[in-house]
Image 1 (cartoon, rainbow, N blue to C red):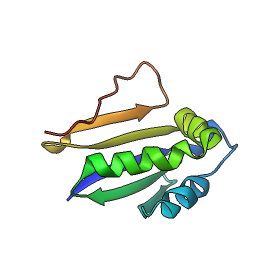
Image 2: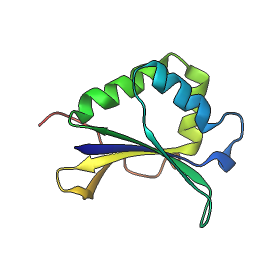
Image 3: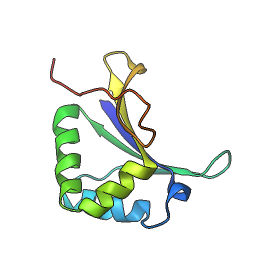
Image 4: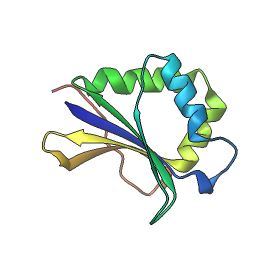
Length: 109
């Protein structure tokens, strides 16, 4: 089972909440494990587990396209990464609020 994580840094922009993201992703049939971190930072991890990361990523993108303002907010506060072929040792960075980060395109092998 592979993991895709949406990490939300809510203090970067308080226009929305991770709960708004959860609402639309759950409506799309995706229910992540929620991990709230407050001790050494302030962020929320939404962890999705799937054997088919391409389908999962497609479902997430489709759900967010229905809410463009929320998607723009997530682009300002989020980091989206998934496991690579070697698990988290070679993660794939799918989105990052810092535009200088190198993004990986997720493709089928």
